Length: 382
Ligand code: ATP
Image (cartoon, rainbow, N blue to C red; front, top):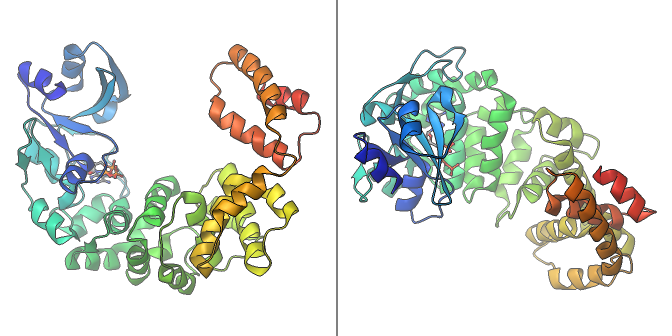
């Protein structure tokens, strides 16, 4: 219906990017992107509820029947500075121009409102073959935006695809350009790589193309990365992924903080990985003691069990949960009382996400840091 509205106003609009790719692959779709010939102001005139999420890049978020749609005006490549994104964007009225600036052929497909696929760069062929191939000249594309090299390897992981030969050769040749890219942006791609189904293959590509030399803290760890790639099995979440990575590249517990800080990970993420890594070490040599479990908290304990299962092939999650639930400290009544008071505080303090706060508090209680719970929680909530 959104595309229809745009068309009724005299413009063209298509689904583009990951949502088209994932629809064809029959994978779950994360977000729906629409590209259009209409300029942002024209989109805002069509829809009553819009949010300027990135208007300087031509993107407007449209809220329509409780759904959100990112609608971006067709753009073309414009001047790049220092191998980063263009500072200015040039809007165009042609879909083909817009698809031409996209990174890989499988990401350069568009789909009309009635499901017709528009495919200027043989993206469908590559999708069927399972190939990540740059649109046009890989060398030029990586010079325009060096992050694309990292994105290529993360799609190898996420889609379980392989790199097309010329694309791979171009990464091998131009890997050093990645140094110019902000770590935060590289981290986003790296986490997706760690979580992807083909992460083993992708990690090997990271080494073979020597791109890892330009990833924060990985330079010295080629061998460790091979160990990491060797490991099989599903990785359920980013806590597990990071913890196994630091385990296999054999970082000692003192070095985790510095390593993850290089990746610009949050303090909370670093702490979680540190706890999980210590718990994993412990679990691999002995087994859970009551205290160990008590100091770890359920989420981390479960993640550690999963890692343990990956590494040794044995694990007993059900027993762990029962054991945890029977610990005296895990007292539902206590938590409920503090919860009520907490809600009262939250009503006075909008903007705090209750779920996250409760998890946090549960952990604080679990690790025994909260002595006088009510008071401490209330002051913490403030
Ligand atoms: P997912 O949502 O699964 O992470 P995605 O393909 O939607 O995958 P995004 O990073 O959200 O990934 O990018 C959306 C689309 O924008 C891509 O499919 C691609 O067409 C285009 N794109 C994103 N980043 C770049 C880039 N650096 N260079 C060229 N095109 C890009």
